[in-house]
Image (cartoon, rainbow, N blue to C red):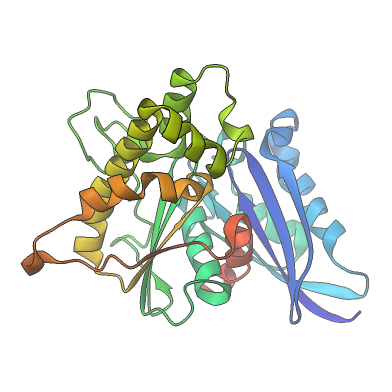
Length: 303
């Protein structure tokens, strides 16, 4: 094989996914446990990550660029992650610059929600959308908005951390400093903790939506947890839909799989009078877990 390829990396608190993309589609991929890098000195982490990328490039082909999506905050200008809470092992050092030196190609980094929404816009459910909103429901909440294919930015050019907005009077303080923060109440973490407290003998991650549909039919308390989760999710989402006015919203991440169970609570929170109607066209991710890594291959083209 000959020609150039693009690489994309999606760095999350749990897993790091690498994809090699060619003109014909995905040529290779690999998923690593992010925790593996905590046992490597900070001075060598970029080198090890670069070696993983190079190992996936087919013989005879060359790397053209590398894009990285990472759970934020991310300084997209300096190419540095500032996430001491869920991604400390890749934070506070010039990751993008170090990878540029090791690989000899352009490297650009952005928030993982931006990477995921770019993936859906270019390759998945968001094709042809003019204003696309994406909410990722995982360990935390990620939010990204594309307007005509371009990420929405704050005045200083950075990605707004819209998963951290107040949605209730809950006294719990999020690591971001807010009480009643949306991420604290509507991430997969909240759902998992509450289900495991109710069903202590059941490992949340080992059961799919069908298991919990049956559990919700047998135990009203399970159904109430999912309804409450949907309601919390809707409290933040209704704010974003009102302010941004997207023509399409995509839900992704591990908790999005349970949409049939929390749909009623979500719709309840999104209900408004006709005069203040919002676009409630909400669809699931088409690409699933690979959206972030695929979208990351596009990031260098935006800078």
